[in-house]
Amino acid sequence: MVDVQKNLAQLSMERLVHFHNEADKSGDWTFFVDEMYALECVYTCEYAGTLLVAAQGIAEIKETHYGRDMAHGWEEWTFPYVGTYINDKEQGITHWMNRGPGMRADGSYYETPGVSFMDFSDDGKIVRQLDLFDLTHQMHLCDELEEVGLLSPTLKENWVIPMKQKIIEMLS
Image (tube, rainbow, N blue to C red):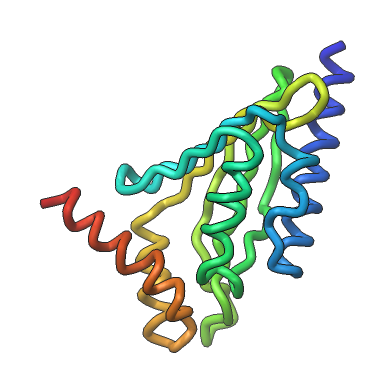
């Protein structure tokens, strides 16, 4: 039974990676949520203690993380996967990159790493997801993109400036 569930979780992980690759191309980050997430799933992203994005259920995930957040300045970013892992308890880990627009003069990408931890149901749906990334490096990356004229004004206004203000307040 474990092998069947592990295989189902692995197939679900492969579908998620495929859907995210499609979303990177199309800019639509909500088309796969109904298929990939359980009705009462819990999505959480803690931005280094400065901001909590928490969504309970498919509608909230579409309204927050995959809807509001991905559609306001992140349009020219991609989030390619570096690797995935499934254990014998239907739990998955993905390693992905926050890849900004353009490339550096040396040919490297403007990017920072991220990781997701997921629990899958018996039918292969995501029931819990926690996303983490290094906020300090992400903010530095946004500063670097701004210096070369590649930071979206929308992203700067909606995410970078408010996030910097929250970090300053938190550290004061």
